[in-house]
Amino acid sequence: MMIALEPLSDRAFLAHFATEREAARWVVAVRAAGLRGVTDVVLAYRSAAVFADPDETDLDVLESRLGSLEAGPEAAIEGRLVVIPVLYDGPDLEPVASRLRLGSAEVIALHTATVYDVFAIGFLQGFPYAGYLPEELSGLPRRDEPRLKVPAGSVAIAGRQTGIYPRESPGGWHLLGRTPLQIVDVEQGFFAIRAGDRIQFQPIELREFEARRDEQLGVAD
Image (tube, rainbow, N blue to C red; front, side):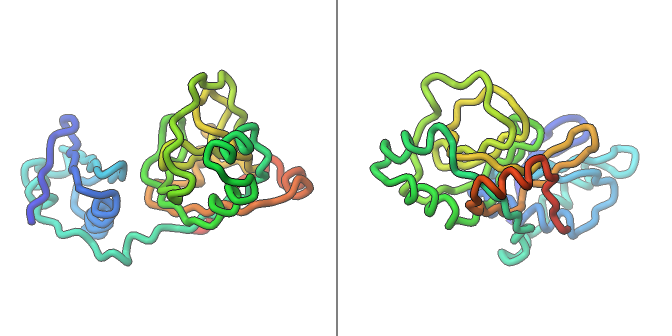
């Protein structure tokens, strides 16, 4: 089946898919193909962008080759597993539990039992959009009044997704807890979590949080 591509710029193409996993399988195939002139492949929600150097390849030829690539096998999209320690003391933990008719311990158990796919990175540099939440935690809209300052490391949920604020910023997601680890250092070019990875949250106590505060998240390639 041919993949329909659309121009993203004068040196990039965008492909759309029915599901996130289909997009991830196609990205695996593009990266494995080693096509001349391709400079980057970026996975996002049900889509993938391919960037190329027009001085290194004929873009019309590249578009044709990309369109004919078959998606990689399902097993090939299992990205790195990144374990995130979390102190579940967030200001929204109890309100979330109350709205969902759960106990706080149940919210924590459900949130930590799932391995989440990282679908995309944004709105802040290094913010992972990951999902999907278990059904019992899904469906909460963003807060009516976003906070002006969400602390760095805050672990939050909204809709069907969970994420981590890499630095202090405004935000409207529901804060369940915080990780002591630094997941992004822009100045050093350090971004621990990438689209296509998987993350799982691990509950910790205050003592461990304080001992590991500001430690950089180490992830093996």
